[in-house]
Length: 173
Image (cartoon, rainbow, N blue to C red; front, side, top):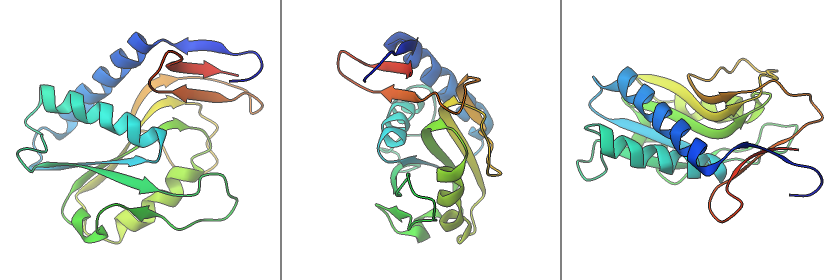
């Protein structure tokens, strides 16, 4: 982190937000037979891992029971053109699934809007979005179903999410 940064969420506060998001996901999906958490690499995937850990503690979803999966979503985030979306599983694995697409920050909605079409190529049950921070600068028709922190920022400001290490936190630059 360079320049002036303001800490918005401490590691403990991040854990609280993840726990609350996990409970909300379970409350809205307790009747599902299976669930897919699809995390946008890299910080969205790290957030999805943390949500997965919580879900395995509080719900009937677990990888051991084969009713829960954690998927990597790879996309070039910082481009003005739609880029190819790749997964670490076959797209046919999404058929008849309830999917939670996870990213660390929802800014304009571009990244998540580009991630959605491959999921819709399969007959999925539903698709929801979870983010740790929602900046509400929506330019694409994407809304988060689950949000840890809703934050009004200027377009010049930047949100940085750091997972792990002694600098873990959510920062405003």
